[in-house]
Length: 150
Length: 153
Image (cartoon, rainbow over all chains, first blue to last red; front, side, top):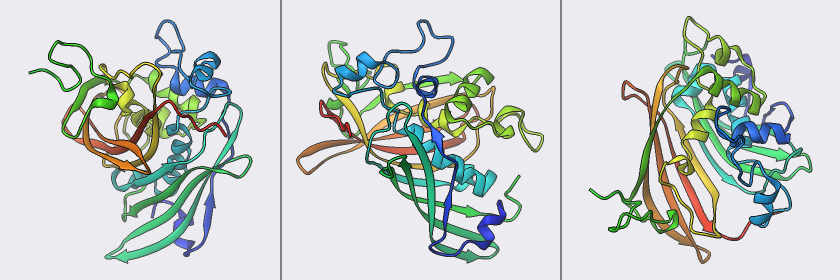
């Protein structure tokens, strides 16, 4: 079993990851292109206030993938190597995340099925902004295979 | 053969005009330690598996890098029509194998479906990431809307 928390989870339990502040620097690191690109960062609505305004936004927003990856980090914490072989996510993108917003990943266990030593888990998965609004929401599934951990 | 993203006169077609069966130009790239660490900083995730590696394996490629580099916007011939944007509505991702720093990864993109929902056109693009041995690492389906509209609140 990849993480001891998995053993004790029952349907309805919620696992929450750390709060992450989406600073402008982190948005640029994610969406600015490789650091050896010149000029850096690439100008887009994730990295540049003018580009964001041209797209009808009040300020740069994070790529939707960035908060999604905070959910993935929480799933890697739970499932370890198994996530990289059996992880599945199905997410809808609901709200933008602006620079300096805080996002927090959450998982609520929906179901667990055990078969021949392998446990399959299904979670409701979402990332919430500091104001409580979900920015991405959907489901996550993964198997925990004996000996599949680190 | 003319790629789907080019018209018969060789001009690039705008992304929103691609239909099921069309493909974007594939991308190959090498994952350096620096590129990987850039995503560790972006995600504030400094797990040792991504920096020094665990279990005798090289440092692992961060999943944020895999997801970011498999966005259709990373295709060399991705081009938006003037004044439009590409909005991600839904994404289905399956992780199938880990990737490691130093490897060369290839990404292909195929439009697999076009549909309409509440009067808005959606394009579903499947991205497949493989390593140099041909092993599939990640498959994701992105449901995209091309629009001037932006959610801002």
